[in-house]
Length: 218
Length: 282
Image (cartoon, rainbow over all chains, first blue to last red; front, side, top):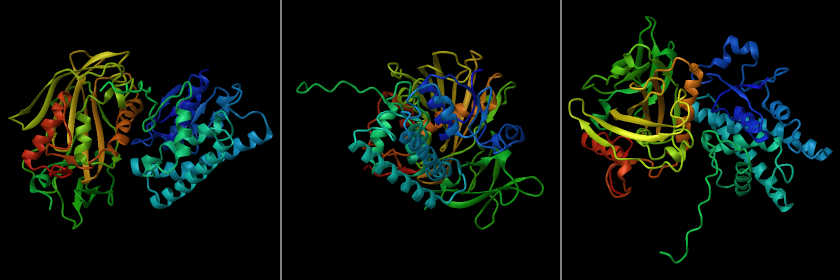
């Protein structure tokens, strides 16, 4: 069957899965869930599918997955490179960043839900924790650049990048600017230029660069 | 000091269906704390900080209140009462921008290909043709008519690109309604509104609302389509400078495509509806 994603268009975690599927060319059946204002994901019908009442949920035909990082693993299977280069070091680093992405969701992601959709949160605490995360990513990407690598775990993107990208890119939605992080901005640009990249509200596609203006013509 | 004309308008504060018992929704209007709740008799009430009740109207699925003395009834949308339409409350989105900027953005067509790429517009179809703008004397509303635009996916019920016709209407300082070609029923209009709650001059809650002919699309998909469109605007709105909407010429140079915006700004200025506006040419 075509894998079915129970989806909310504004959710960073749902976007991770949509983006990954697009990058590896897997078609998804999208089922819109009325997350806001209907809170359909907390209703009995949805909880029968996912007792945690969280989005996204991916039905693969064989499995019902409720963690977006597990969905990335499932989608990347059979697409070499997306889970690392097969080395012990890469495999461990990918896991490190998949776990890290939960910190991004709990800080920057929650700040965004607070600012945008009125979720109750300790907004100052969320933003400060989010800035700590961004500084870690920035420092890591700086070291990676010195070693000639553009992505989190190597010279090509993996599910680690896709897991971390949405909540980082959407940080301004939660009142956290990305101006201080040139490494992060370059990394985001590299992800946005991947073949098959798709956008979501708040994350824009790269518009084609116009030809350079002719000098002296004016 | 907030002008009396601003205080005497109606403002949206909540979705009626989601308004619960006291303490209900604690929110803000024109910088003042305000509370929306359902009392023991089931009546929806709006109270200011001192506990005094404000005049309330329930319309278009939303709770409206007037912090001053209402000078007229809240506007109506007769099309919304036509049988067969689906009324869709789309929830609320908070935007760090002037409430007037949120309305003005809703009136603009020229940004469609760049902000709502491949949905409401696409390059190279970027030209906004001539359209007509006038103030309706009987109702004192801003109207733009005969607006035509090429759209790749104008609505959930649209398949492929169509030439969409629009009418825009500003019936209140912080509300705007658009009428657009209905893909499912040629000859009828889909109606989409945004009702903007001014929390402060630079912060607002936006309540999108729709009255559509569409028997097919699930409710959640309709809501998400509208939220997707509006959230594409949010990051743009939050970065507009100056933060307040300039009502005096001098800072921004309008073009032919901005006729509606120009009329809206003049209308606001003439009526003294300056909350969220910048009055001095910068």
